Image (cartoon, rainbow, N blue to C red; front, top):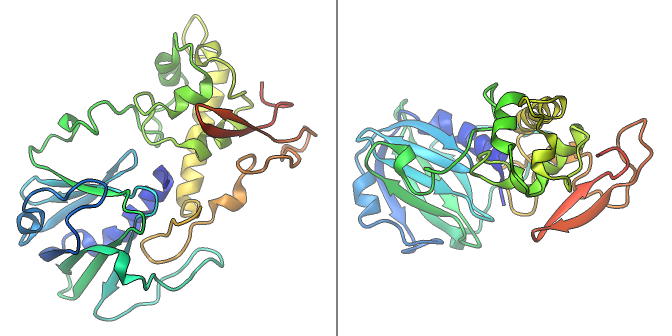
Length: 298
């Protein structure tokens, strides 16, 4: 499933063509994805201007002039692509560029836009597995939506520091890995980047979350982990995300952060920490694969 860096990469890819554009029409080629489209979804969007593209956790947010907001989730295989009147060459990260999807049978929603420069634009949502969805929030307060109301702090920027992390983990008897995956604690962290952050912070995924919190609050372990989380997310966004299975960016290219993985999906391989000499192990926690080095992660 696309994680926060993948969704942020999609947002950045769509932002230049969608922000400020006018929605001429929305073409729905089926009545539902994971959930049914909202009643009169296409009629309510037609004629509106797109004010901004945002993101909260793993949700893409399309802000409209009426204060309506379209909440998009990419599910397992959802992706957007952009078609314009005059096709432009788009830079692709690394060597992973490939042709845009031609499987029109999986094109389920098409946004017909008039760009700020007057060009006609088609933004196509393609989703072979149909686990993604689009919902419409219409009261202007995003924090009141059931999907967003209980989300924790974002793992980007400087708000997530050692003291904040300590406060959120205090008293948590669950494993550190499970706590970091809890969207009520930190919003948007997924399995890949939790494994990578714990490796950087030299912390075992099996220890209890509360064990890294000191009596006075923050601790050296909390500071290390907060720094590692922010760094992993920032680097993954800069790299365009991780292309696992079906994930593609809005320009049709693949992310390449997977080539910087230190432990994820490296079971049986040597630890990447020079002074370690350990071997990466895989265990299962709450039904999810956890990759870590038992030699240097304590």
